[in-house]
Amino acid sequence: MVHEPTAPQPCARESGSISARAYLDVPYAEKDAAKALGARWDPAARRWYDPCPPSAGLQRWAARAEVPELLPGEDRAFGSGLFVDLVPASCWFTNVRSCVSSVDWARLRRPVLSRARHRCEACGNGEDRRARRWLEVHERWHYDEPGGVQALRRLICLCSPCHLVTHFGYANVTGRTDEAFAHLRRVTGMNQPQAWRHVHDAEQVWLRRSEQVWELDLGMLTGAGIAVRRPEPAEQRLAVAEEALRRADPPATRSARGHSA
Image (cartoon, rainbow, N blue to C red; front, top):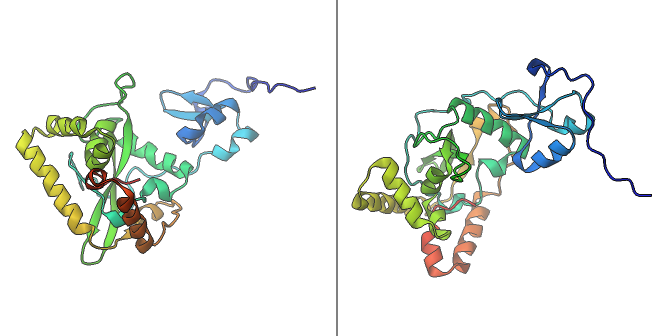
């Protein structure tokens, strides 16, 4: 006989007290699995929790120590505002999210959104599900050109339209150039010639930076106790990027600048 799985039963010890809740670090992609095992959502805290700790099935998401709102060496004034920030070719296919576990990414994301009061730090908008506007975490990098080091200096909360502007090459690749360009002008107040000059200048910086190989410095994360999975050596990342460009059609190649996969 095949037995159908049963839903988790309510916890007899659950008192409804917020202080008794055991919060969890549940990545978005795993929320359905956690919910099926009994996790519940706290809309005020914007976190999942174990209503009857310790529940064996939920222990893999047991919360670790909180990440500080200000990471070691982080500069909250670095890279403020909205601007096109194209990622050099040798840095493609790497970012903070790809170098940490899904649980640690959830731990990093939470304080970034909290300190921004769940508002985009570029335009001030909040999340709007009906408008399909989300809040996302974006990296601000410092490029030491003589030393060839790309160092993480800040994590910033951006809404999805502002994030699209930042990765303007990705907007081009996905056919959303007009959308990104209009949002750039709306937020910054640039007129059309000024905005196109801004995009052109960003492309010139991209061309110059893409001529060299960069090493990734994520010391800001390791200083906060986040385990970092090192990406492939920069030389291999550059080869992957060049192969992707070689296979691309010419228009896609020109517009792919700055896309971080």
